[in-house]
Image 1 (cartoon, helix red, strand yellow):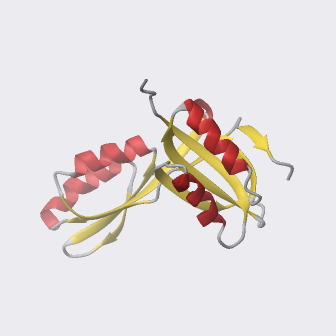
Image 2 (cartoon, rainbow, N blue to C red):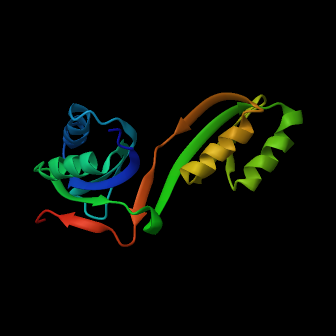
Length: 170
């Protein structure tokens, strides 16, 4: 019987040391999980880093990968982020070809999406936009009418106010 996949966002607190990211990510790969988005960041504790992983899984396989991940000695805690109580953000940098006649139209779109033009040259502009993945997708859809040169997206970073923590004896 076919089981539906659900997109999950997991926040993993790990020791801030060399090769930790490779160990966590390779565990996902060895178990057949495709990572949709991955970000790593510093925390308020210099000995810890936060890895935010977005992936698709069935309920059963999600529980298995979480259990296996928390067994790694470099993992201090793992949170499955609740979409209702979480804040998600992503950063987009977009370079578009824009002559003087197109800039006004592009600036209006950027303003509507509360983005910023961070670089401007004679023939192009670079736009910075932060928001939910859906907001960035919507912006990209509108911008397809323009000559997009390059796109760079960071991937999702997230925080939850009431995370259900699986603490591993810090």
